Length: 79
Image (cartoon, rainbow, N blue to C red; front, side, top):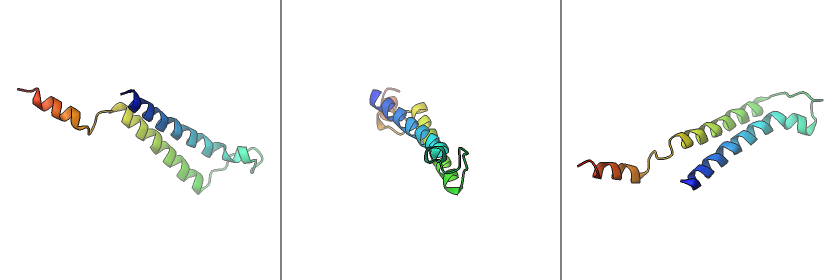
């Protein structure tokens, strides 16, 4: 269980880091004199990073979906 939680947190943190990098890319490379300009690649990066964050949150909210352990355990104890 702890390994799954650690993996989910790493997925979420990677998405947050990617999202922050997209916004700060122009500032880090000093290409637009302190302004942040978002182009098509930036919007794509933002969408992808938000999807990664949402995926990690979904995995954290429903950690046991799709596992064979839960479904077989619940059906056998019903009788």
